[in-house]
Picture 1 (cartoon, rainbow, N blue to C red):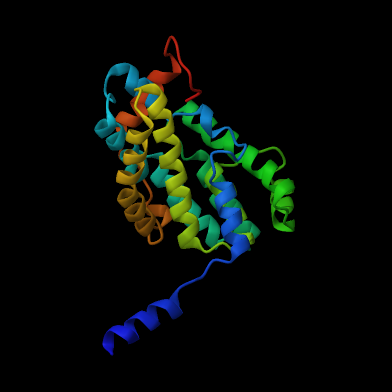
Picture 2: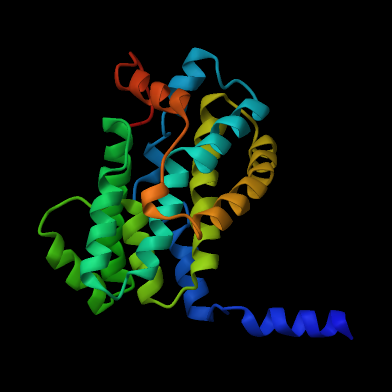
Length: 241
């Protein structure tokens, strides 16, 4: 009886995602969504060049660091705060500006801002909402981070925060694994094994992100930042970051 009550309580407290919300979330975090994610590696290309990432295990370590304590972690926290502030223009714009500044190198800043502007542009056309148009008007040409733009779209289209965060974290991890498969190189099976191995990291990071204050946000991944800086002057490269 106690087990039945526990299950019912859990289900009643769950925020369910609608079919339309799920479709939108799948579209926005798909590799086919035209934000240019395929052209960025978050410094991974330099790490492969240096020999720091050379197999599946080291790829999982690198991407896991991005999600757990690097730029991916910062994006998850910003996403959570942006989602909650989405219907308060002043509060949301403050989160958005904070997110735009939260990058350790010029290339990772370019990565976030270019994908953010592309996401906002495409989403306003394919998944329109007055709140997205109002935000674009307030931006007046200023940059926007990918995470902030995604959070706004999810909140305005009633995609629950928990589902949105998991999808966003998974999308980040999967994109970097895809880059690693091409760079190391690895086989497609190794790529899927790496993605599966990263899911516990994504789940833990999304849980922490929902209870982390912006004032407490920080990163602790100096090797990732150094890889990104090295990539800026790398002689031959395939990716933009």
